Length: 339
Picture 1 (cartoon, rainbow, N blue to C red):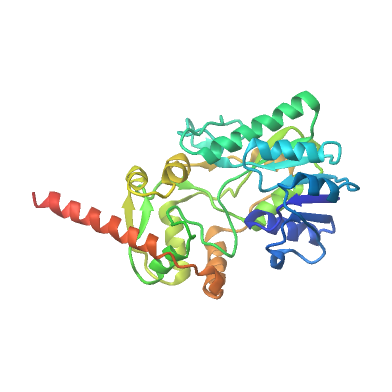
Picture 2 (cartoon, rainbow, N blue to C red):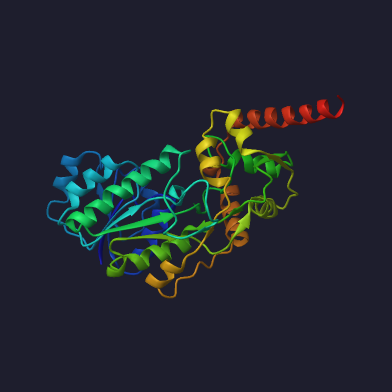
């Protein structure tokens, strides 16, 4: 197939790009060329800023595609632009939405594609919902060949997936675990979550490309493995070869005492128990199975991060914030106990 990715170098899309080239597809990657080191050999680069609609229109003037996927669309205006660019130029348009768009709080922890979309806590999720609404109107009214894909937390070798971290990523928390310092886990750590390795996601996504049964459908792609946040952090500590020192803090408290986006990221997402039902994906992509168990995948990630200095981005501000939160809670508990 002849496929175009808008983006193509992120955590999710890089794994799909590599897989599609290996499968022999003709893959075009449209981006600004800032991460050429992760572009697989054999992919065709189209260097442009997707927001420069006139330049992109000229760049793809003589091209048509079997599938176009936008990995960096976040608001309806992005998709209005895509529609103008690709109407009549692709047989399938795939939009990467988010499982965070599902109803919060959940009426049922088991999530299917039929779970209502509503997230009053996170603007990011509400924008994704608005994007889905716009595309489905195009499908119903004009037959625009849309497929909506909803990932949940998907990770790769470059970044450790966590519930609570600062603005510079996960390394500072990994460093705290490695050094035996206490780390914050939201809630009591027993809520359920799903981590999906990007190689598993890529296999599911590849099976949707050119799949006529996926037209007009929304499909979630996640692992079937369900873990508690305590198990997730224990697996990370185990991969580091150390004992975990965990401090459990309510999500509401974390959201109230920081300028980090914990209202959206926790209360609107990770503080909720989620178990994904992937029957629809397996019907559309027979034989699909997520095979990378989290304890194995996170060991690979930890090994990579520890051996690549560019993944070790310090965040001293977040480190100090963690110390203040932990000390404040310990002092409060001591004060109440002695009152």
